[in-house]
Image 1: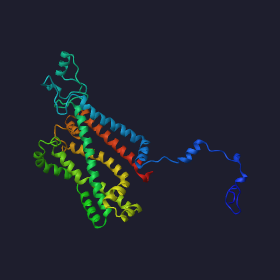
Image 2: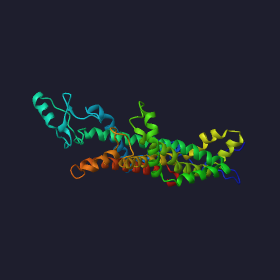
Image 3: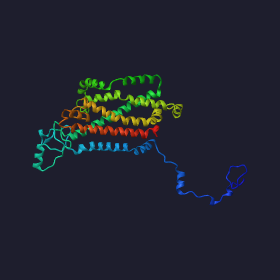
Length: 359
């Protein structure tokens, strides 16, 4: 066997006899590590979160939302008042507690403090016209509005994901029929449907809901959820269908079909995970849309039943005393703006982070 140290004739081999140890420099430990690890392995979610953390507006929105959620969870355990409780002192109704300014006590409360020397929890935002603490009502109103937004977004996600997946994957006549149904639903005026359902369901649902956990929400709020389930999923369904139409003819999907994989498993394991960016972004943007819808419907008197409240119903109640007590309208309006703005900025940040077409 010929020696490898000497270059063979008509060979591209490097002639090692012309080189010695002094001709080469040994690689440093850092250079060896660079050769061994060219890049850190990551996942779609980790890579998206890394880009999201670089977005200052999205991170600021997360901080604002986290503070709001922390306040609405902790405040009811600290504040001794209830959202439906009229201020009373020693078990007696305090009629002088109506329309108090922020951090102001009523006459009975002041007498109680002077006689007993005990301090009372302040009315941070004052009281309303019925003598109820306005701060705790804003807290519960924020709870209701956020809950409506999250529940509505989940309803839209589930219905739209299932409907759009079936239409996009199977295609053909089924897709044609399903999309025409979507077009019909798009043509329905959602506000008119909500008003009609509220009127029709008011008498029907009230005796059914009586004594249940849904009785506090009232027929108007239940009808609003029904409308969300009937109308607001069509946008999600169209987006999911479009994504599936562009994915279902890829090689890995065709390979899964060739080996006899069930359609449900192909959708669950191969197609829907590749639509994850669209699903995350659309769901995140659906939450502020639902909150805003609930707010203006409650402002029109089609929201939660009294004494439970939401941010929209608080703004509606404040209209009558706008000139005398403008802060009652400003406070819920500012909270609505903060929540909707933060969720919109977060949705934009999620779109920039998880949409592969933008990266």
